[in-house]
Amino acid sequence: MESKNQEKNITRRSFLRSTAFGTLAMAVAPGKITEAFGNNSPNALFTFGAPSVSLDEVKGSKPNIIFIMADDLGYNDLSIMGQKRFRTPGLDRMAEEGMIFTDHYSGSTVCAPSRAAFLTGQHTGHLWQRGNGQIEFRPDPDDITIATQLKEAGYYTAMIGKSGLACNSNNATLPNEKGFDHFFGFLAHGAAHRFYPTTLYRNGNAVDYPENSGRYGETYTGDEFLADTLEYLEQRGNESQPFFLHLAIQQPHADLAVPEKFRQPYMGQFEENPWTQPNAGYTCQSHPAATYAGMISYADHTVEKVLQKLRELGIDEDTLVIFSSDNGSYSEGGYHYSVHESNSPFRGGKRDFYDGGIRVPTIAWWPGKIRAGRRTNHISAFWDFPPTALELAGKSIPEYMDGISYLPTLLSRPEQQEQHKYLYWEFYEQNGKQAVRYGKWKGVRLNVKDNRYGPIELYDTQNDISESSNLADEYPDVVAQIAGFMEEAHEEPESDLFSFD
Image 1 (cartoon, rainbow, N blue to C red):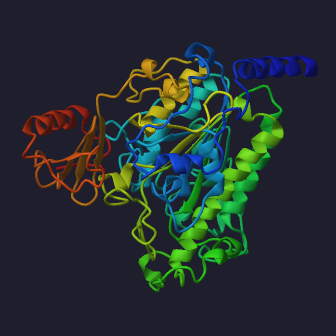
Image 2 (image 1 turned 90 degrees about the horizontal axis):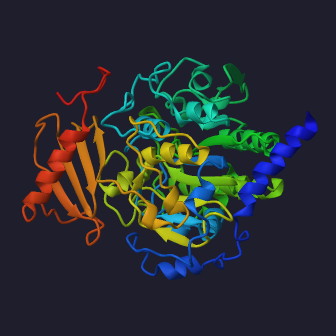
Image 3 (image 1 turned 90 degrees about the vertical axis):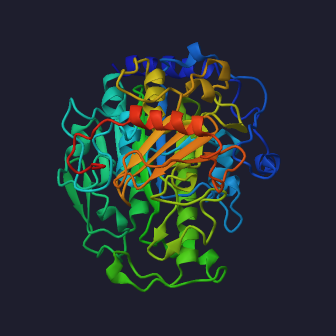
C-alpha cells in the first residue's frame, strides 16, 4: 500500500514538472520589475518572453492550490506596487518570480460579502451573504463553496485564519460542514478584530488562550496561524493527494497590533497621531503609523515563510499560490489609508466603490508554469477564483457561477482568455451603492436607497485612474449601458438583512 501511494505521488508530480521550463530560469533580477514599471501605472501591461505551457497540459492536472488573503491591505501597501515608506521583500520576490494582476478586484468593499464572492464564485448581486451583519452560509446545497467542490475532485481542503463563511457565527463546525477538512481560526469577524484572543476554534473544538485578554496577551494569532499552516504543509507535502489551503490572515486590519520586533524598525520614522478611544471598538495605539507598517511586514513575513516551506518540501512547482486582499485599506482604529498612501493611486478606501476600496494587489506564483516577471491588466475579480480552481481540478464550472477562469492568463495565453462583459458590485451600507467596471469605464451609483435609479458617476479608468473627472454628461450612452448592467446583475436578496428599499 505504501509503495502504491508513492507511485501515485511520483506520477502526479512527474506530470506537473514535465511541462516546466525550469524553475526561475527566466526569473527577473530583484528590483527589475519595479524599474520596468516606471511610473507604476497600474494600466500598463508588462510581460517577458513567450508562453510557458499549453492550457491543455495544465487543465485537470490537480496542482496544490493556496490562496492567501490579507485583510484590508491596500493596493499600494506593497513596495513592488510603489510603496516607499516600508518594504515587502517577500511579496516583492513572489511578484518577481510570478505575475502581478493590475486590474484585479475584490468581491466587495467589506469583509463578509467579499469573502463570500471568493468562496462561491458569485458577485454581490447574486450572493446570500451580501454584507456584514448577523449572517452565515446556509447548509448545503445552498451556498456551495469552492472547498466542497475541490473536495469532490479529490482535494484535501483547509482554511486557516479568519473564516469567510459568516460575519458572525456560533457554529464551531460550520467550516467543516461547508467543505473544509481542516479549520483553525475565528468563526466571527468581530472576534477577528483582536490579535490576542481568549479562544480560537479547531475543527469544531475551542482552543483556549488563558494568557490573552483579547486586546493584549502573550500569544499572537499570526504566530498561531503561521505555525498551523507550516504544520499543515509538512503533513500534506508528502502526500499524493492534492490540497487546497485558504490562508486568511488578519493583517493589517485594526486592531493595530503586531509583535514588537516587526514594529520596532518603524518607530520614530513617521508622524504619529495616537489612538486613544478604546470605547470606539478598537484598542488604543500610541504609534498607529509604525504599527500599521509593522503589520504589513508581518504579512510579508508570513507569505515568505509559506513559499520557503514549499521550496523546502520540493512541491513549489506543484503548487499555485495566489496572494490578494479582501478590500482596500481603511480609516479606523487610529489609521487612515492616506498616512502611507495605502490605496494610491486610487480614490477612496474600504466601504467605497471607487477603486481604492475594491481594486486590490494580487500576485500569482507557480514556478515552471507562470513565467517570472509578468504583469497583466486582465480585468478579473474574486468570483473568478472558483472557476479557475475548478478548471485546474478538471471539474466543470457550474452555470450559477458569475466568474470566468483566468487560467489562460496565468499561462500567458491571452488569445484563449475569455473576458468579462462587465464586473458588478452592490453594497447596502452608507445608504446603498452600486458599481460596474465595463472595459475602461467605471460607473458608480450612490444613495441607492433614496433613489433606486439615481444618477451614475462615470470615470475613464485608463486616463483617470484616480476617478476624479465625472464624464457622465459627456457619455450618456455609456451611462445608459452601465445602468442596464446594474439592473441585469441585481437579483433581489433572499436575506431580509439586505434591501435597497
